[in-house]
Length: 304
Picture 1 (cartoon, rainbow, N blue to C red):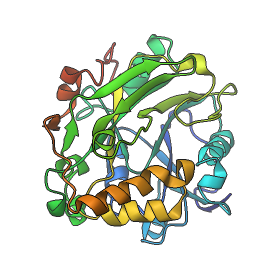
Picture 2: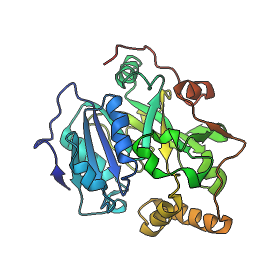
Picture 3: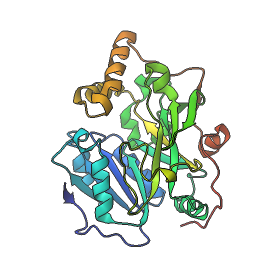
């Protein structure tokens, strides 16, 4: 990998909160993504851009708090991005806390609307927990045709793709990690996708991403309470184009078989309708607490 835009060094100040993310052709979401995490207290964005052609890279190059990296290999050949993450976390160093997400994943938690991530980190530290498991909740609009991506320039993504499934999930544990499956993609496309991720992680010499981003090593750290959730944004008015590209590109698990299946189902159905009896409109962190997707932060900790 090589860095095409950064501060000239890969060192971090002790009080910084860095975020590592991967992106590919996500120009519609990246401005809102950066804004969201800046409000949560992130001070440095460390990004690998996987050959974007839609203006994503050009936009990121203009951001003073973004270190932009590129790679001679594609996402799939970098162990679906895990090799990139491990390389960057090694370069920037630990032990320290990192946010670890993709550009379509927005971390939320108890009162994220008015406080930064530091109370979450303090709560994890007090509990002796070194990473935060979080369910990935697929967000979608009632009417896909009206979910214009141009609206993302002035509105949060959850104000446009503003619904989620309130039930229909299964939770289990293995020897390696928590497992959560279900949601809108399972309901509509029978996509048996793992929804658990670890978007906040204390990275030290013991850590690796191993066989799966959903089961980081060491495994014993993967069983904490879920004080956060990831709002996942795949469905706007341009969803068909994005899903076709993902299927054609073949970078995801099993040569993007899940996306190929989605394109087939969309072709048969014509217009996709994601709303169901399980759908609820997203209203904020209190709703996620009430539904049981997240647990309260304890202690609240000082605001930073």
